[in-house]
Image (spheres, rainbow, N blue to C red):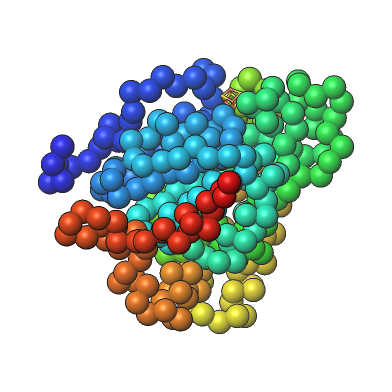
Length: 328
Ligand code: SF4
């Protein structure tokens, strides 16, 4: 394919066998990422996707860009390292709620306060699907999914609230089966300069028999007048809400962040999706580095030559090897 051809979602598909369960919400998120990359015309060699461990962490195998399926809870260190080495790269980190908010939660918090220009998408189904459905950090107290012997006794992490107080400058929630809406959120997240976080509500039809596609669609409650189900999800943008900062004032930042956190606690009967908060004023980490090392943005590590005209490595690591040599 030449770079002059218009990219479509098909350019971001791989021929690999996909072993997600039929009906898994992961398919909708995968398609949304592929469509977003295509609509932004990001050439595959200019993007990379990093994941941790879990069902959703198989995603890099199914997207035709650079990628790495790393270790449990660690997609963010890899993603941040890649972005800082090559600031031109579009970097997306993906993983489940257990991966990102259990073992990986320290990375989650610290990625936010650095504001590195990456997009982190958590596929949130409330369970550890890959290991047969144990309760994850986002499963609410008192909920008993079919794999649990008794109702969950732990309280849930609120990913949106945690992202906002951690410093993420773009925070949104999408729904796996509303791919058109989710694709737009992903496009906005990629275009935002700073750390973007999207929580995607992702039904796991195999292990989460409570928060199903029908439950989100409100099939269990019918409006007595219209005789139609009353969906639980609604779009923030359709209510006139905007969490986008208009000024760089601390007063507005605190006010909008507070309202976004309040909205993030709505759960059950009415659950908002859309952009909760966006701060276009806080400088991304790359600019902060350039502030102390101006050469960085013109000579990032990945742009350095690795060999000279004689095709010899330009870095001499013989001292390191000597130091590590095992002496008899
Ligand atoms: Fe999807 Fe759940 Fe199956 Fe994992 S176990 S692939 S999350 S449906």
